[in-house]
Length: 208
Image (cartoon, rainbow, N blue to C red; front, side, top):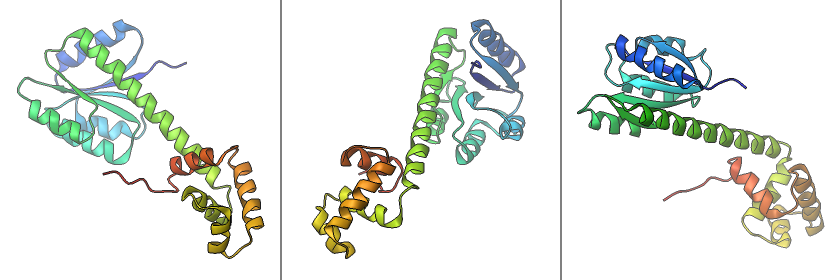
């Protein structure tokens, strides 16, 4: 199994090297370093998923610029901002833009490693969730349009007779569609089929 990858993006040579040495000494990571946000963005499309330690104040593309571009095109990275004292307002703005956390300089080694561990946990959760969504979508794609109609009726809590009336088919036909869709979705209950439908985005979720 490959060790998780960390990308250090900081224009301060001494700090960048210090972080590299710490992470390499920890022994659990592969480390790649970039001296500017622009250099990292140029390479990002070819990089594997990982955690980005991102300095917030850099010439050219600063930490916020990099973060906004990353979050607009990919979810493969989890970002930790490295900030100087007095940059809290910028750090808060960065977290609103998608940063997972921020670490103040001068950082404590243990705190930095703990933050990186938490970042990889979040990244793994996101990857798992994306995989579950893709799997649910592939299952839903197996259904015919009429089977989807019946599933939506079941999600609304409608009885077979009501679904049959609304679709202008017989209750017996609804039962057949219902059996077919549950077979295609590889489930044994309506509740399980409902969970798959929501995971796949077949039914919009409204949050207030």
